[in-house]
Image (cartoon, rainbow, N blue to C red):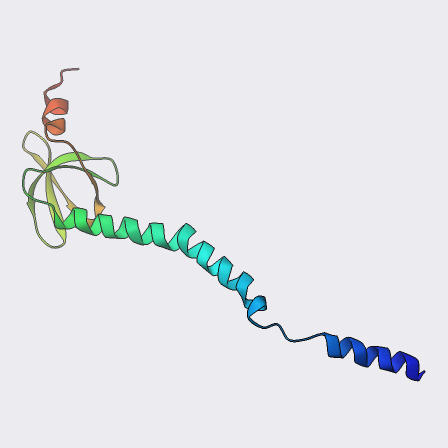
Length: 113
């Protein structure tokens, strides 16, 4: 019987606590998720902030809902867009998704069906 007890003590003695080697895998997973998810999201947020800061009158934009218009007026919260001749809408500033090349708005509005 003492033979079995000594085996149990031997197993306990070899089960050492994990050191730095035991932490490498969880740290590696955290670094992987940072580069896969967090960093691209932060980069997109920074680009969107720069886009909103660069708004000026006359710039042609597309909103997140797909509305094409030319910026007529804006303040810190809203942007007034001309969507066709003398038709204006106001959208929240953060709804502006993309800047369009100059002339896109005019080309689409002068096109005849």
